[in-house]
Length: 149
Image 1 (cartoon, rainbow, N blue to C red):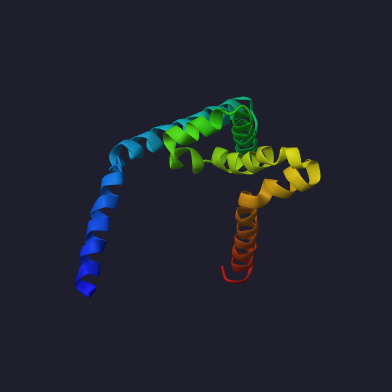
Image 2 (tube, rainbow, N blue to C red):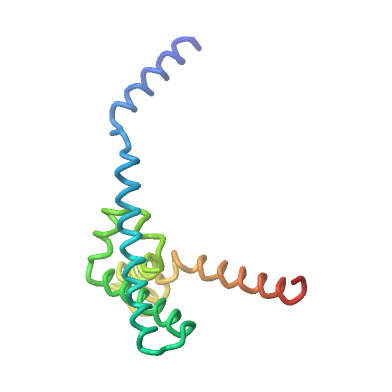
């Protein structure tokens, strides 16, 4: 009986493999790299613009991050960032614009449920853990810096 079960399992696995198209890893890697790099180039252009306007580098960096989050949220609201994400995969998710997308997408999805229970409650559904663990990590690093280093 066990022999028939093993044979059936092998047959099933062969059948399943036939339904899954092969992954195009090299092509996906290139697309993710190109789109992620392009997003970073846009960020660098914005940073250079602020620095050329005689804004101190630390403030220019903060303004650049804010600008990139705004652009990510705007493109998500317009439906463009989702298309970029479908094309580039993680290449669009890793830069800071992907963080903005992860906040705006759930908010837009649940806007029919109202502002408080829909938008406000769902906005941090995905991004909330990132904010919590990022804040926690910054507190731990600060404590270590003060007491250890």
